[in-house]
Length: 171
Image (cartoon, rainbow, N blue to C red; front, side, top):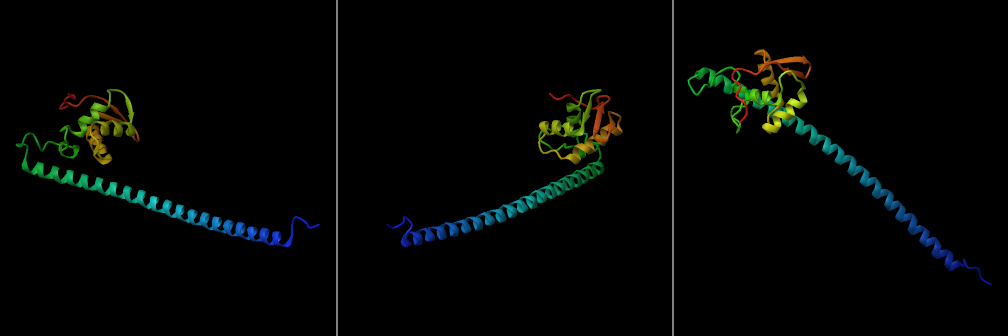
């Protein structure tokens, strides 16, 4: 009797084993290629994130410089043009669609006597006026602090002490 594993069958099994091993090699190579591509994608996304952060910082610096330059122009023109040129108006977003100064938006967000973290102030102001930069908000907070309307409790934590005299409630 012949065994079930005759020479032709052995050759066929050996060939199938070779095919399986070759395909396993191709799978390993494909897995390595996928890992390399994923690593390259991670590096590209990191570079994209860094570039976006730098762009945002550059845009904020530009906006601050433009607001400062606009403030200088207004101060040299004098207060004859619709009340422009008063301290605190120019860098606080007067050119925005709502027409409300960032200082007033901050007062809208804060409640007298309440301690509020800076992150909540950022969120609240951006809900009222999307696109307002962190530097514009910090600058407006600094102006409010100088006038005694806002108290700095500790780093990045503020409290509204009083409503500024020129404040008009949001209508």
